[in-house]
Image (tube, rainbow, N blue to C red; front, side, top):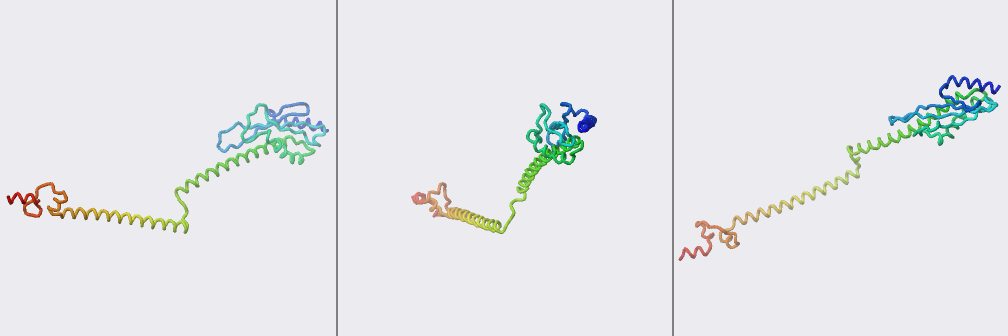
Length: 229
């Protein structure tokens, strides 16, 4: 009875997977499963393919079939799935399906369960990568917003700013007053120089030209002597 069930199941699988199933022996075969991968806008990679190899024990389906998960020969490695590394996890995911279907033809159900488990694994990894990108983008956006909003004001920071501002204003006022005092001194000196008599300018070596006759004090002594002669 076991062998009859095996032949019948094999014929049904031929009609379901006409291009995906390949015989290995009279009691074993391989089913190729093309997975739908989620890429989240990245450059699309070739859809991954995994294979479920099934070997019937004599007592199947009263006992579990022998199962092996492999990759097609020379298949490119997909960034979200590595059969060699993920085989144990995928096999473990099939065990509940095997136990639930004991005593019945279960290969089609196992193929469906394997496809679902592998696609879920790739989706979880794609979600994790996308979450990292979203987090990095959010952090960059927060840093950009901080440039426009500035630093939040606290009582301590305001008091510190206020003290610094007052000191800067005092320093500025002192500097401006000193500059004004300096300008005033210069103006005073110039004004005093303009009030010098001719004699004072002559004595200070500031006189270079002729002087008007109206002011005797502005004429040098030498000129007076000449007039007297």
